[in-house]
Image 1: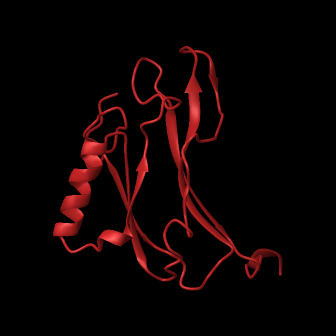
Image 2 (image 1 turned 135 degrees about the vertical axis):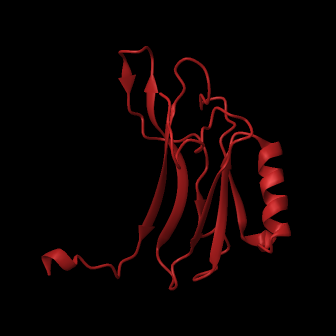
Length: 139
């Protein structure tokens, strides 16, 4: 499909030089769990046969791997190429991003199909869990 406009050159995991860069902040107060993970959303066996595993063979990036730096910013670089990850990290550090706040969501794993006729469809999942959350709609 040909795409025009601002989304014409968006992230495609099948391109080794591509990277998705996510900038965010950890919650300002400690929570039970915070994570960021790329999952395999859909996998095609053929043009007409698809299933939705919605799992990942990749480890999550979470508040423990991020150092529980509540309220601090973070940068996550998602790519299938270590060279691309290193290049992006160098550029971020040169621009002033603290090196200890840059994390990698590496997609190079034998169970993740980034290219080919039936490449996996990926999704990013951010999980946040706290016992202090309330359901404002039902209160």
